[in-house]
Length: 78
Image (cartoon, rainbow, N blue to C red):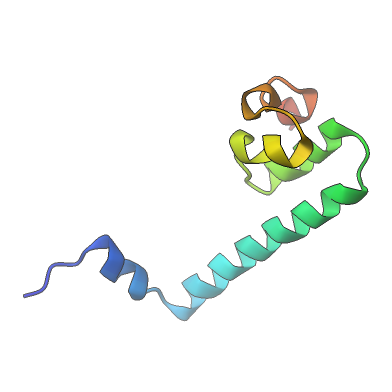
């Protein structure tokens, strides 16, 4: 009997799970495009945080260090 590895589990995703993964990736891509028209860095950070970006991912997108992102007002907003 073959053991289920993580690689095999990834291959067995349902159509709904695959569509959900695609949807999340598209949301992130649209977010990256949307921040280009926003001037305020904290507003950019807030938008990206709401799209489930990690601080280390947000930093390079807004031009600051990832560790500094968590200290900004945009990261602390709810």
